[in-house]
Image (cartoon, rainbow, N blue to C red; front, side, top):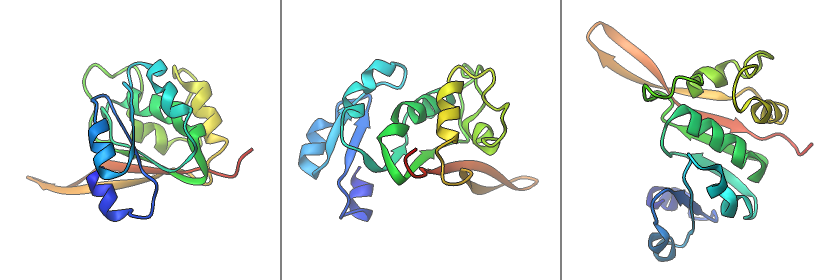
Length: 162
């Protein structure tokens, strides 16, 4: 939150985490919400808040958690707002029942992309209300054998309210 405070001084800021950072919120002028991406009911307080211009997911980085957070908080995003998901390149071995978030977003316009997905209905609802295909940004790094690109960050822009 301190980084975003530096670059977004005019924004009203809120933070959320599994750990309790409420003291930091009070000290740095942001509202804090506590939730656990494993537990959808823990999002209740944040879902009751006013709408946001930007939601940045830098949470557990598990693909299912990223996708569930997107589904649960999309309605809290104002029209034209940005939903940013960080660390797309990481996925633990126990998270294989859903595609990696970067792979899912790359085929977001495919009608079959959500067919067997446990969050399929919510993802289809989001797809119907995005302003454009999600943008995926890459992190380049060098390894023996040449340059490799890995998906790092995705940005979804919410369309007008429908």
